[in-house]
Length: 275
Image (cartoon, one colour):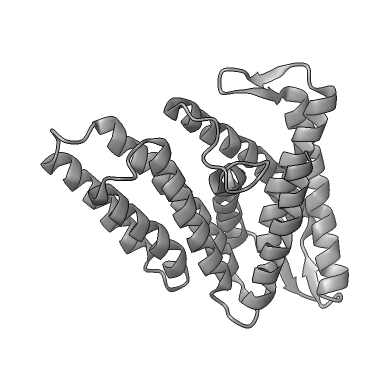
């Protein structure tokens, strides 16, 4: 527990500093997402023992670095298509060298990870004026609900949620995580409307409640999805770079599912408007 708290004390200010500087250098969030995307891709390829294959590693790393950077100018769709096309060509041409299961792993785990983190940069690019709110909302929904689920599950958890995928997760913890995540999102919105935006921006609190309710569920799905991938690769954690948490992907798994949901939602139902 002590190491988890220390890691949070170091990590949270780093993210807040990135968001602050993003106001003056608009690509800061994109760069952070690209770095996280690269780190997660390395962890995924290492877990599957594919990291030493240059024909796989080099395109995956290029894809992971480029996609978050190209979201603001719309070229990410072309990059995504070229990457998927390359993987299929490699599978066809080198079918004796590569297993279909390995290529499927790349097309699911790697693509999902890079796409999810790119959507975080995409949500930021949708509304540069209020981008900090969208990004912090995504982190609050994912991480506060995760922390809430951890504490509620530790004290009240009795019924297993998905014992074959993640034995420690409980139904009570999941419900507690959803409730605490929604509360955290509302608090985040209140702080932004009355303290950071000084009342000059109106936040759609009904929209925030809907996003938070859906987002807390998607964060749980993200956590379970990457737990399933870990079990299939027979690894306990994706890495050990973050004491008490594991690898970068162990911290980003819930973000990877929550960010696309937020990215899509705010395009149709904006959460902010000028007062």
